[in-house]
Length: 267
Ligand code: OOG
Ligand code: MG
Image 1 (tube, rainbow, N blue to C red):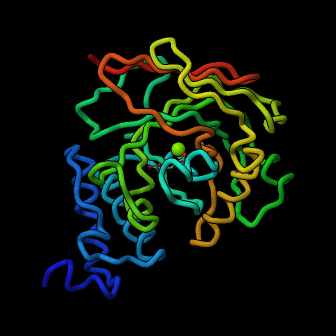
Image 2: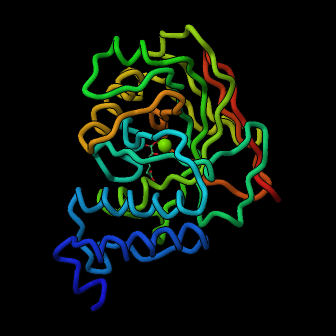
């Protein structure tokens, strides 16, 4: 039976087949048609199941889970992509970009970069948690750049499509971790490409205060039966719209109080 024939039911075979397609699309850096346009209508739960199954394929190839990322925690991102619900997905070791390192464009389909803030956890966080509990669980914070690369043609998707595609996760670079910085509610963030400032934002764009994104991350993880783990990195979501990356680019984020994070793109 074809994938389409199973589609109505969100059954395990469909979900696994879709996860395999998305994983292969990422692995081979080749875009696929949106699931919704292929007649595959996933439920929200089904979309998260596909996400888990595709991440499981990465883990089976030897990657490790290093944390999670939050998505659509700012208006700027929701407007850019036409999606208005928060999403989340795992970050794995294969997505790590060395700070100051270079990224190989051949491994990506149509990558974009966006400015974020990262949390490093020193304690497990089982949601739902209070703001104070979330703060207590954090060892350090850092400026971060996320590289997103939708596996769908033209970087277009529905909410379920993007969740199934592990929230477009494909890379992340973390700047220097800083301890004892708790005031994150209005930090200026400037994204530069080749020395030119291209996006200006404030950490306030992230749910009014990025700590709220960590609270939400713990809650969403708990709703699907998991906890955030000590040692994990949590990306709070982008403060501005994302920008496309091109060969030879140099990307840098300057974040007030937290410093900078940067990487280059191979020519
Ligand atoms: C989905 C990922 C959203 C963010 O920071 O809001 C995200 C996408 O835009 O492709 O990572
Ligand atoms: Mg992001």
